[in-house]
Length: 79
Image (cartoon, one colour):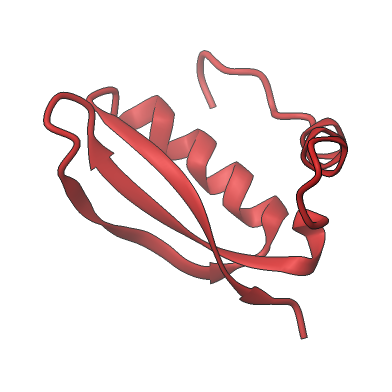
């Protein structure tokens, strides 16, 4: 990874919990890509992955796709 520091997963987790969200470690996510200018959804880039994997995958996508926004959407609970 070139220009970005590795995200602090525990800090992100604690921030979510402090804000009143469910513990993201108990959820599964999909990563949805949107065009930065139009807001049009470009597709689901990863589906049904854990929080750690979702954060790391999103970081890589952000570095390589500067014209997109990415959203982590919960799709279920870890079983």
